Length: 249
Ligand code: NDP
Image 1 (tube, rainbow, N blue to C red):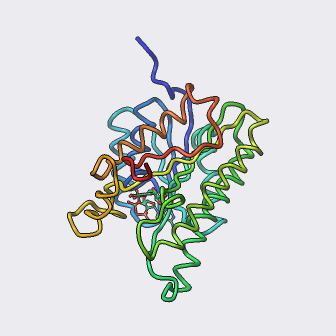
Image 2: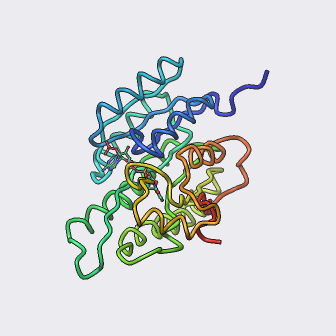
């Protein structure tokens, strides 16, 4: 009988209560990892996820930490290390979106997107690298909007996700000598609270741009993250992994 590929691995997923993050927590646990995850508001979802994982015999630890607050992010990483007994995998998933034309983009939304999508990732990595050893993995969840902008209003979100892609490449150089890989998973349209496939005009227009002509499922992203967290991806670093149903072909 084969062993689950992530047995013995300890992972932290930021923004693990809903959508891609929640499915990633479930998938990493199913593949054998012990997993901590952060959230900012969804306590009920966090408690439910911890209970579901425990009922399956796994380990999940919920940590309330606003990704926009560097002190809370650093404390969350330290708490994950303490609760899990170390850290092997960091998944930077927490992010927010706001779409508006540049002339109307609210200053507070600009600050929030930069703080959560760039700052949250940076401070999680900055703290985690003090604990990660040979064979560890950093997996950033970027967006296909780093490469392709489907309509007006996406410039600031795209800016933050472009930063995720370039930070990933820089980190791959910084951490390669320590045997730590860093990759950037770039989802296309995935059916979540942030981007519901609800049949409105906008989702339908996105589907027309995709080779597969449909939204993806959170499982599609979580499966790639699990591969990148596992033993068979050790020679892959600094790469963009598009999970976009052919949005960019
Ligand atoms: P959701 O909005 O469905 O879920 C976001 C998760 O992040 C929630 O668990 C939320 O927790 C958490 N979160 C949000 N803000 C914060 C914060 N300030 N601090 C801590 N946690 C926070 O998002 P998706 O699942 O759709 O997106 C996940 C990732 O995938 C993001 O990086 C997104 O940019 C990326 N992506 C998604 C696409 C899509 O089509 N869905 C396409 C391309 C990229 P809480 O409820 O507690 O705030």
